[in-house]
Length: 351
Image (tube, rainbow, N blue to C red; front, side, top):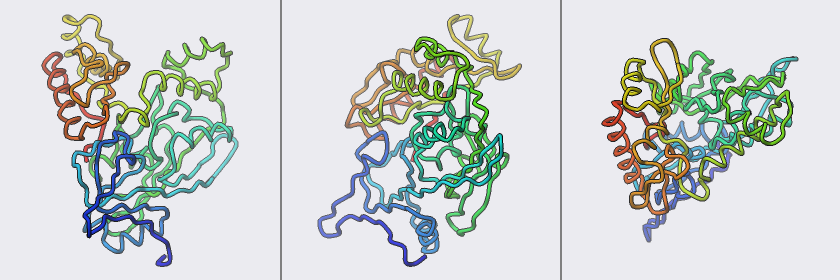
């Protein structure tokens, strides 16, 4: 273990230079670090845990940097997770269990599952970030969530070095939520994620946008996982800005789930408000509708604002700070609360 090569960059103590991490997070705000450590193996991680790096120095941990808003302009230490690896754990006629290193790129893996004849996550194509971040957020799109396919999460206590396995139930998944965002927030470093992927070729096309795109493209029934993958990629590219071109972290707010009584009250004033039943007493309202109704679609304030096609996406036009983006997001929350009586909850993690 002590023979592993660590990749470390640090600022010069002579001229006080700082390392830019602008390209290590998708909002691309000008953030600087005194030191950056690139983790590429389990052995490196264990070595750093033994040294007390996580318990004493408390670094900012990034994977793809796609679901975070960094509020400070200067960070003492940043750790980048690039732990790779893929392994088939078990396979039968119906299911294949694949174990993924937490630093693996999520979208690349989704694309490769199609080449392997596996399905179940094609609806989650083009979601940026790493595999290790997926269970923290319980990523989801177009009727599918990670919890639908997750078998197991392997994590390490960043203070003690003890490894623990979390099965699906132990992750306590909710809507864009998990135990790793609540009770265990900041305590564990996710090492690997094991998914149970199917071989039946059955797809989820409950979201009309998918079928509409496939039909418009001349697709034939039955719909294949490849067709769903292609449709999701095309739809996301059309609706969402590329973070490599415009700084953003995807949807900034969760779609709120409210009581039916409040929904009916709102509907008397705003008849066009859409809603999707969750159960007998609650309903999910598209946050994008709320923002557009309040006039935020395409709105720009200084160097930040809402995207012209998708108001849920807050963007950095080039020189916005994390604090400025957060301040703008709070203005949105206040206006939506005042207009609808609905409290929007950020999907983004503030660090």
